[in-house]
Length: 137
Image (tube, rainbow, N blue to C red):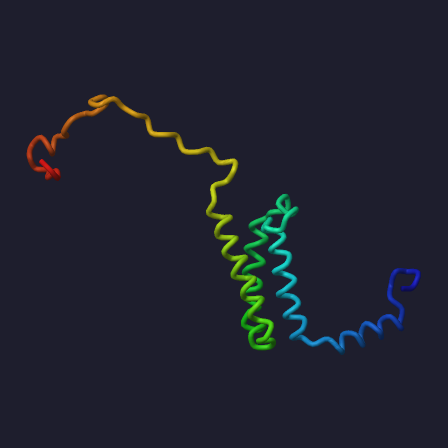
């Protein structure tokens, strides 16, 4: 690069030549794989990445890859199956993670136990009048 931080003409030509060799289908597949990799890291499933867990980012990653899958399947059917499998695994992990109780959440209070006859109000007015059907009575 030149002194001003801008690429010189030779570097621009080399970058342009590199872009000519790249195929869009390669970029689409690489994008899907890259997004999946980042989403897996954000899921906290990779050992050592637990502190980076961000389920909102996982959800965005899942949606992005789901959007790319029809194109991946059309352009690179041989590479679609492993990407689809990884996406499926990530979706299942996301569902498990979002359905588990938060470690910050308090457990619901246990119901109070009452002694027999304690706190029972007896039959209500409809039951007393005989107009309410109560199974077993």
